[in-house]
Amino acid sequence: MSAAAVLLSTTLVLSACGGKNEEEGTAEKPVELIWYTIGTPQKDVDKVMEEVSKYTAEKIGVTVKMNMVDWGDYSQKLQVMTASGEPMDIMFTASWAFDYVQNARKGAFYELDDLLKEHGQGIIDALDPAFLEGSKVDGHNYGIPANKELPAQEVWRFNKELLDKYSLDISDVYTLESLEPLLKTIKENEPDVYPLAVDKNQMPYVPYDYVIEKLPMAVAIDTDDYKIVNVLETQEMKQALDTMHKYYQAGYIPTEAMTMDSLTDVQTTGKWFADRATSQPFADNLWSSSYGYPVVSTPASEALIYNWSVMGSMQAISANSEYPEKAMEFLNLVNTDPVLRNMLDSGIEGVHYKKVSDDVMENLPESKNYDMPTFSLGNLMITYLNPTDPADKWEEFKKFNDAGKPAPLLGFNFDTSKVATEIASVQNVREEFWAPLMTGTVDPEEYLAKANEKFKAAGLDKIIEEAQRQLDEWRAANK
Image (cartoon, rainbow, N blue to C red; front, top):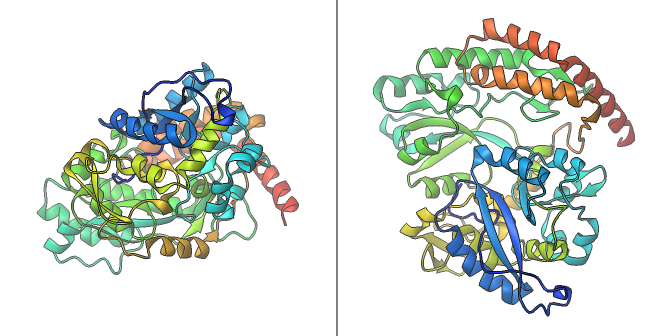
């Protein structure tokens, strides 16, 4: 996202040993908190954390060592580190990275109910109650959600320079199919540009709520019966995959899409025309500011509140943390103190950014060395505005949140313990088939049947049956 994000990846190396009496705030030496966060490691992290630590040492007697782990490596690396008992205090977790629910159930995270009451009142006051309620696992909080957009809305994004160059109109774009004439124009006129930028992590949008992200078990968004189906057997997914394959054959999608880790390089060069992203109010401003050229978007779905959007960006305290109280004090400060939050997000004033007014900032050239994913670092609603943002940006966020409709599975967390073996097998099948199918690289006529056969053999039907049983019980209990 933009240079407005650093909380999660905050890292410094001041010093820490942590006196026994830090609870009274009289520790002679500040306690060092070790923070692991997600995102492309930034050159100036240690430099920024040094400034962050001066501030937090004075405020709450802690310093911060931030370690950033790249997007594609984060989940696996954190899995290994928590299993081996590596020292850490705070870590980024989400529905899509270092799986929040699964790791909470495994005991990786400290249960936060009491800590929130004692040291997290500012967090409770700042967050829409749906965040803390919707992110409970088996009745308890194990993570602090970022105060951000609550619903998720998919959009088609466009490189505006190319839209303008060819006078292309996006007012009728909504479905995947509706993109076709625009992609064709770009393909015919811009040989160096990806008409539809897709990498191995992407999948076409279909109106289903997934039981587990990126596994083929889902409930239709407009469901009456809450029946869990294999999404690969639905008409909507079949049509989407056919269209993706057609686009792939037409040369609209990168040839190497199924092996591309990310689109960061493509976005840096601007050699793309369209892609799909999850939006928020005024996201176009954020994207344009981050990429350095204008980006515009138009809806590709309605705005719904999913488990994964509530849990889309969270900070957890490690179950092995030596300083859970201090970690919670720090997270409370991050989510309530604009000075700290913006330092984490945008770096050092006068070096990485300059203030244009009280709550508006502008990136300086050095911001390229500290470009954090804003969403990953805590409360968005106390970050400075970009010069192009409207003054009422955060009021509009609140309206967007209030208007979001709950998706059918909001609040339901599948306990996978009885089908752990089957889930591992199904995930192996997913590794084999998912990226080739979702990126349109292979012919779904041939590959869907193969994939479904393997998913069944791996135990998908048994997982669906267990998930259905739990969902029916949950619905009966939460009428």
